[in-house]
Length: 248
Image (cartoon, rainbow, N blue to C red; front, side):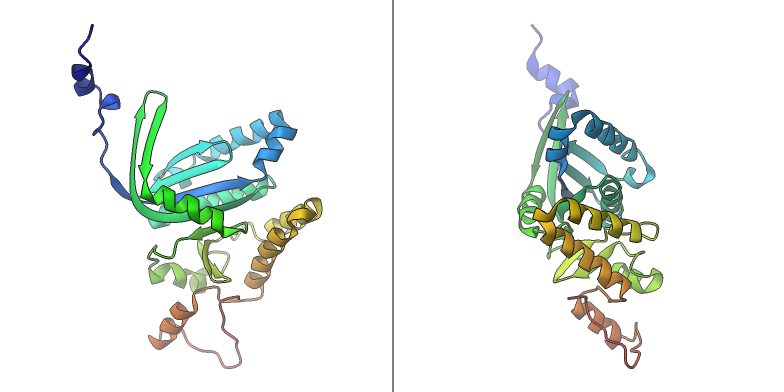
C-alpha cells in the first residue's frame, strides 16, 4: 500500500498547503428566476446555460476565475477592473435571456483548492458577499462600502457617458452598471416585459426601470462626496442652471 504522505508530497492536488491565501475581489451573484425556469422547462433552460458556458470562454473572463452552481455565480480576480467587466458580461447574459441579477462585490482573503472533482473554498470575502447579497433586495450587484474605488472609475461617466461607465451610484448604493452602449433601450424593454409577466415582483422591476430613467435623464449617478471633490479640485466645471445630483 502506497504511503499517503508520499502521495501528498508528489501531488499538489492533495497537499493542504498547495495554494496560498490571496487577497482578491470577489463577486457573488444570484440569477433571479432561474430556479423557477429550470422547474418549468428544464431542457430549454439547460440549453441557455450551455450558451452561458460559451460566454465564460470569452475575452471578458480571461483574467478571472469563475465557479457556477445552478443559479449562483462566484467570480474572483485580483483586479477591480476585471471583475467589473466580468459582472457586466453576466448582466448581458442575464438580461438577454430574461433574467436579472442580485449580488455583491467584496474584497478580502480567499483560499481555494481543487482535489479531483472537489473544490474547497475558505474566504471571508465570500461570507461578506453572501450576506450583502441577501440585503440588497433589488436587481443589482452592489459593491461593498469598504471596497476602495479609485476616482478614475467615476470619471469614466463623464468621459464616455453613463452607458459606458462600469459603475453607477443610485439610491445610496454603488452598483455595477447593468447597461452598456449597445444594451440600453433593449434592456429597458425586457425589464418592462418582465414587469408585465411578473406583477408580484413589480417593485424590483420598477427599481430597475427607475435606474434606466435616471441614466437617460442625465443624472450624474456618482457619489455626492466624489462629485463635490471633483468640483473642488477643478476636475469638473459647473454649468449654471444644471441640476447635479446622484439620481436619488
